[in-house]
Amino acid sequence: MRPSIACVFDMDGTLVDSEPNYFDADRVFLRGYGIDYDEGLRDHMIGRGNLAFFQLLESLWPENSLHRLPMEERMALKDENYLEYARGKTYAFPQMKLLLQMLRDTGIPLAVASGSSPHIIKKSLEFAGIAEGFSALVSAQEVERGKPEPDVFLEAARRLGYPASACFVFEDSQYGVMAALAARMRVIGIPSPVSAQMPPIFSRCHLLFEGGMGEFDAQKALDFVLAADESSGWC
Image (cartoon, rainbow, N blue to C red):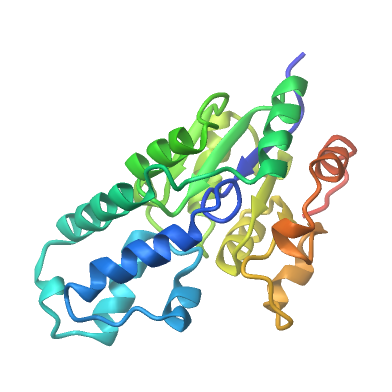
């Protein structure tokens, strides 16, 4: 019998410990164009897609030569630089890897919905050794609007063949949580970075691991998902 629920995962910072890799790779890439990409700017970018990344940079450094390149070329250069840096340095979070196996054992369909490009999603999952078992991989570049808009999650649900209300989303960023809630999905929040001043939107998660990935427990997350009643109207 087909399961009544499905699970959708953000990738960077949720499935894969890749945010430090992105920061280092992007900092080197942007330094070549005279842009100082610091931690404050990085924190503002977490959870957003490549298009929003470059749009914000262009608003801050409108005269920079980087922005004379077509957007597709900028994205390709950023992705190339990231893959070169991240190969051999990309790992799945252990408890997430365990959860994926548990969910696959139950037959619950799985999808990834990420702000990264389609190529980066595929390669990152391969680098981390967790590429198998996903029924859909959705990039924000394939929809009209990236997070915090719900488009990428709604597209993941469509490809899985499930209503949004039957989907659980695992997210680490405030923009991702906003997008999942806007899609009227049930949200498991795993904040990253962990901060004493957690964005207020996390208080609306249906299940929250306040300590982030350091607190995340695969069995607790699985029990929560399996206990769901599709008709209970959580969202």
